[in-house]
Length: 298
Image 1 (spheres, rainbow, N blue to C red):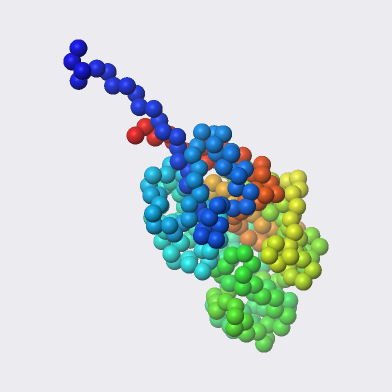
Image 2: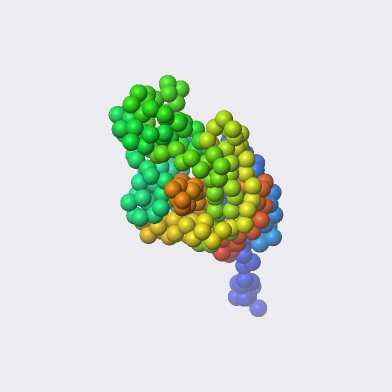
């Protein structure tokens, strides 16, 4: 038989490659990343943690790119969004969602869309901040682009407010200080593939209102409540309606204001999965990745 006419053997698909994106300060991945590494491996996926601004990474070789712990983006937003725009369709949530979500002005848009949100005013100038803070009484001022609680200020008298010289130069958002933060804390619901999968309660320390561990905050896992799950699902659905984009993963933060739960933030870019506290979050996240990973045959 002519060797050139022998039947071609089918090519075995290669194991799908998932790039889990982090930053130089967290090169090994987010806390508790071993749970996600194991969950991906169990689903026949090859997971690699890579730094987003590493020029040696071939993003086109990945079947799925999932942003996880890029917690330096707020100081380099233009670079970060430029990187995301070049990754292509393998990037979960995607650059349009990131561009919208990394500017806290999105809270004003959600408020206008009818979602229950902590009352939020966008402020371009010092005078805008003063007026809004004076209206709220005891107010919170945050950078519109910020992460990890950096740049947050509590303002007792808006009439005399000036930016902290070591803080953020604007623009800002202004909100009332929600008193329940001191006793009820902040509730976070993780939404993956459209479903609420877990919930945590985060409490601030005694000398700050921020719930982040670096400011003395603590966190505990609780059963997902119906009230919180419904608000989280409504929040993600509102985002999808506004942007017309798929939201594969997200974390919806909420507080109790005037007797009801309201959204304080929606994290759709790089929300930590809190795998060190909730290792089971790795399972639905890995399922969502596996559903979008197509084995290659070349």
